[in-house]
Image (cartoon, rainbow, N blue to C red; front, side, top):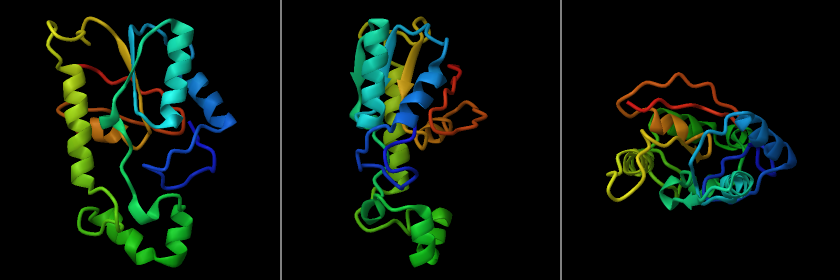
Length: 173
């Protein structure tokens, strides 16, 4: 869902959901509520909705810090439009080669993708003896939209159409 402040580069910047964002999130889950577990990013824009959903469905909410958004360093809180106006070359270079043109103080894209893959694999491949089995128990993961494409670079294919408050079913093997 859309955070307060509209569309900005925000990864570690922890803006809460706007009123529109809350509505988008509620609309996205609609009648889909077969879950037995909720996993969420620690960022308030995800966690607040996860907590509300967990309360409504009487489900536990697991906060996983590995599912936090990428940090944009000195670009945090700036709009793409602002960056295009002041430093279009830096932004284009980042889009073409994010690891070699990352903003000062940011997380490298390769590190971010590795972190997300590690978190996702731990979630879906958890042994039955020590954790729930996602194949047997449906779950929902509440993440920033920028994280979902990273999950979908794993060994299965997703056709994604993402917007604020999107609900994206991801097939499991």
